[in-house]
Length: 304
Image 1 (cartoon, rainbow, N blue to C red):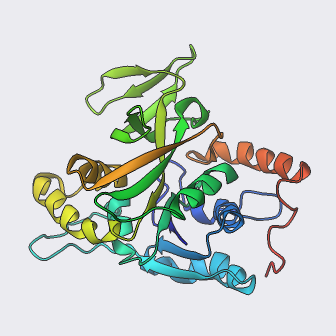
Image 2: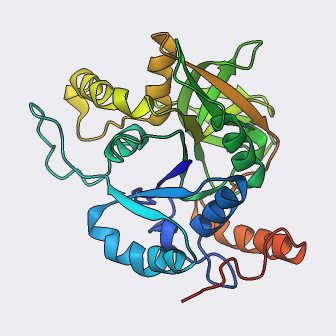
């Protein structure tokens, strides 16, 4: 099985490339733990989506070392290129979103998972993802899945986070997922989402959210190009800022009756670095995990 890791983001809230910022005493990156846990769960191929100009840096920091440890890695490039008939807005440097990132990975022939490079999902997520994908098929409806987290377990202590808020039916099939860009816990303990227009809504602690941890059959990549073109057509007036989010692509396929998306509930606690101040929290968490034997002191036998 393949795991696609989205690593082309710019880390605007972090203030740099958090994908390649060492975050443990041993100099490891979040992506090291992602790949280690995914291999443990049964994934054996990895596609890392990056900006082409960063390939040499990724190879120096990540690729060469993991290949020496027998990990099968290739890169795909999320380029600032648009389909024929559309013009790239002058000055835009931000990628066109997570849905566009997976489109840039090209056709993937086996069942595959998708995760962010800068989120540490926990081993439980990959075990559940792999278990589902071993049996998932493209039938009358494609069988996709999403690992769902409780929003209370996905917050940063140092600012807002972006999460897809989810509704599921009685059979744990995803009905609706809406990307929300400014979720946080207020000083009074209440979790809120602030919308683009400034309005605010409270969220229950156990609200299911997407962390962009999805599982797909091979069919998914065949739909993305046409969906991206329609997205550009609908957002012609906002091409300098708009983003084609992965949850939005998933939602379209649900609405069109093309796919069912099973929500795999997890009570794992997200570990990540949305903001730079999260770094020390992550470092301390991994010290504890290593001391408890969850991870070895050094994840990889070959460290150079």
